[in-house]
Each structure stands twice: as structure tokens, then as C-alpha cells.
Length: 295
Figure 1 (tube, rainbow, N blue to C red):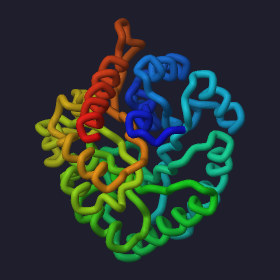
Figure 2: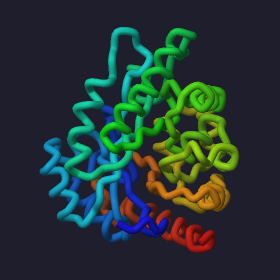
Figure 3: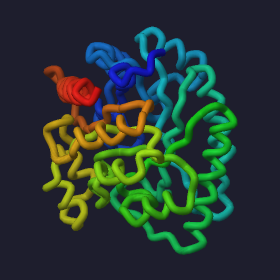
């Protein structure tokens, strides 16, 4: 597969409202989502939540091949800070499916153990030590299987804000998933992080954000879920994330990873018109334009 950036644009089922959070919203079928990814001209997809694609590795690979899509890898929420809970066996089992589908990236999220992303506890020193140790153990395990593990800072998880992101960069060797939306909502400027540490970024989730709604999440006026429902995530180029600067910094460093279009969406019913694919199309066209300009 070519490594041209224009051929490294992928989709994520969450852009169609398909999410692992219980009660998130109406869930579209894999057939519709995968067909619409190809209509947009995407070359690959992340796996989506458990149950979206077939669990058996061969069947998963066949399903993606039927839609002419490559497998990027998947978003994997894990408990990394709880004494007595070892996440390695779970990831070992998961990585067995990566080989069959030729997936490349294990996207780790340090979840709280609670449902959803609207609240979280604080870590003490022992919790931080265990979390950072587990990140490095998982990165090493994935590397042994030829897979790149990345940490995804995410609202409502144990790694959300700027201080927490810096702590991971300083005390762990794991690479980052640059999620441009979650970073901004958590108080980190994704363009500035990309400028400062492009060598630590091995994967991207490209979102745009309505900063006014993000500010309401930051100060507690809105829950994360309610803000998503109100349209906090916007198509690329229609919000307040500096997509141009991010792509420029990554390109200057020789970034050859995926650009995953991921605008979290909540649906209440089967769309009567085109639905989420319209926003994904707009994002794809904007990103292609930026990539051509940088090249």
C-alpha cells in the first residue's frame, strides 16, 4: 500500500454514531457505514466498538476486503491504573486478530472504570506509577507483534489535560495518538503539541471543534455527552482547530501514519437524508486540500 498521505486517510465508525458507550445513541449497520466510507473515498477504517465487525479475525478481514477497506487498528479502552488488574492478557488476545487483518495501530485509552466520559477520579502517585508502567509494557508487547501502540488522551479518562499529557511524554516511551478534538477540549493546543513533539506522534484522529461548546465542557456547564449531542465536533475546517498548522508540522517531520477522520456523533434514529456521511465528506475534502497544499 502506498504511503502517500492522500492514501492514508481513514474513517472511524464513531463518525457515523457507532460507539462503545452504553446508550450513546442509534447505531447504524456496518453495511451502511462501510459502504459510505468507500463513497467518500476513504482507504481504511478503524475497527469500531466490539461487535461492530466480526470478532473472528478471518471474518473481519473478509468483511473489510468486501468493501475494499484496509484495517487501521482500533480504539481500545483499558483499565491501566488499578492494582491487581493486568491489561496484558486482554491485549494479547486482541493482537491475535491484528495479524489476520494486517492492522497496524493499537489505540489505547486509559479509562476510569466508569461508563461514559462525563466524570473521572484523580490518580495518586501509585496510580500514576502503575499506569505509566502498563503503557510501556503494552507498547513493548505490541511491538513484538509488529503493531504500534499509541496512547489516546481523551476527555473523561485518566489522561485528559495538558499536565497529564506532559507527564506521559516525560515518563513513558509510548507514542501518542494526536486526537485534535480531545486535546483541545482537555486544554492542550493540538497544533502547539504537534510543533513541540512531532516525533512522539504516530497516529492522528482528526477532529474540528466548536471552541465555545468545548469551553462549557471545561468549566462544567455541559457534560461531554451533551456537548457532542449539541454538535461540538465539526467537519474539518468548520471549527477552531488549526488543521493547517497540525498537518504542516507533521509533514515537516516526515509523518507517515494515518489521518483518521473522527467527528464523534450521536444519532437518535436512522437518518432520513444522507446523514453523517455529509460531514465526513466535507472533512475528507478539506484534509485532502490541506495535504495537497503542504505537499
